[in-house]
Length: 189
Figure 1 (cartoon, rainbow, N blue to C red):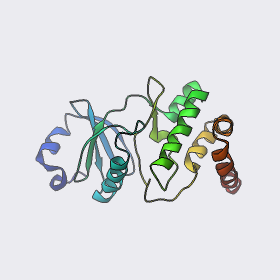
Figure 2 (cartoon, helix red, strand yellow; figure 1 turned 45 degrees about the vertical axis):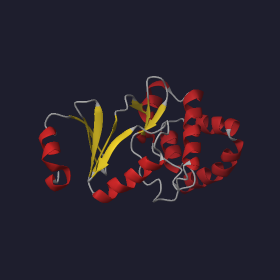
Figure 3 (cartoon, rainbow, N blue to C red; figure 1 turned 30 degrees about the vertical axis):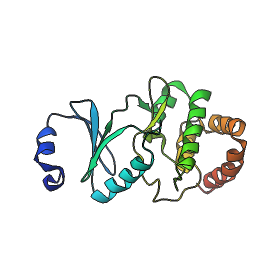
């Protein structure tokens, strides 16, 4: 439930006017009247973790522009598009999108994320087929050195082999580094 002490009277008055976009484990998201989104986090701790990622990734093309963080809310750019999961269901995984996902993962390494992974549902594909991350979580608090959840999602969507083929051709070093871990993960599952 919304904590008035954290958000203040102004936000509480606006909730009824804003358009509900979605809810996850860590919070709820609304589209504000000015076209920006506000994520109301369940806890200040989860908000601070996400804020840390946002500050490190400031200006990175894969992250929406952030306007304000405070208490347990974050106001950022609205990302228009569909999740990578929905995109693949509708259009399949093409080489352009696979390459973009690989470049995004390489950015995670450049940003020194300890979690080189993200779920398909947390990647949005825009109308120009660019990628944006809508829910960066655990990037510095969890240690995952290969795209485990991403590959799990791609496998469920029947697109893992295509992704791995593009990875092998585009980034043979990363392919070699990740492939055994991916195979080992699926052998356990």
